[in-house]
Image (cartoon, rainbow, N blue to C red; front, side, top):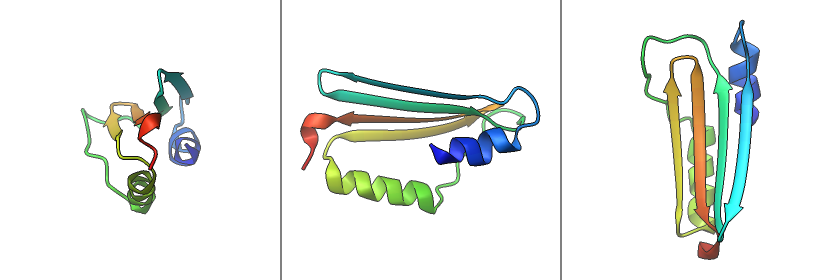
Length: 89
């Protein structure tokens, strides 16, 4: 989430935004962060940096059922985490 401010809003010159949504329903947590980014021509692959690698490792240690997806599209970066809270190990 800190990257939404560090690499998103801080580097966007116009109409910067951060949207954070978290929902827990029937032991399924969905956490989504969207933030503005500089303009691109279409989608760009997201580089798996040390922060994402560390997050994935922590999730593997704590949960057997989760999904983390990241997408960068024109003017927007989205990270979505879904965790089955009942899968805590």
